[in-house]
Image 1 (spheres, helix red, strand yellow):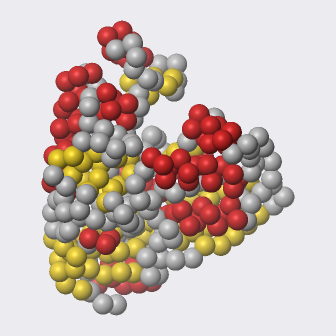
Image 2 (cartoon, helix red, strand yellow):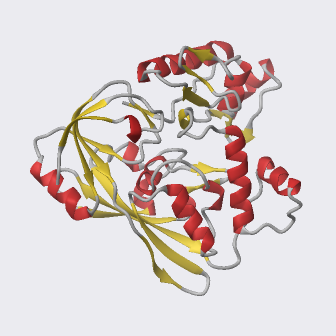
Length: 337
């Protein structure tokens, strides 16, 4: 297995940031991964998946291991459900389309989310009323320290809103190699509860949507709001939607009665970060080659030659302004390196 030196990571991150890896190796199997980890025990390592949820602000002074494991298959099924396994390096959207083509339900609302399958449990990715945890069964992960394979069941992952054990207690300890999902074969639970999906289906005169209809609606919505990373560097939603205690929110809402929000429990509400950013006047603004997308205020973009630090500075400006204006702290969803 070849270890390359001083490799550009520009094509390996969806922001299109120019940064270099001191050393770089792509692995195409669990055996490859085991070998590279065993042979470089003392070396500092950086695990790279699809590069869709990170902002590089500097060169990586480490051995960058690119996880490129491919393959997907059905591992079990009965009349109602099917269990499918995907290797970590599979493109997420292509995997979702594969399940829909087989009429397997559960992932359609997460169509067109950038990145690879292996990183989806890390963030507990989600969109339009669904999250990974809704269909996740287990994942296999290799221990970086001793190359042992461990199976994480759903309860082991401690899933939360864009959170998991892999971002907390187990951070930097494992490399996810494959993921198993439990999907429906019939009696699909079609989720069109979000207004955007309902409107998109109505626009196309669809009253009894199929899995494919929902997927197509989500794709159309995302394409209308979100830039294609191949054309304009970005990492999707840069910020999490803040979750506030109702007691705290009521004080803020009294001052800003037009503020949008969603009840998520008896004690908490979620406020759309995009709305806050737009109200603060950032939507469509540009600071050199770093900016905020004109159609979606949650998305920070690289117009060509922005550095990661320049994009990070824009994000901090937004966070500071939101806090000063509304008294609400918004957190980055993207991992800043």
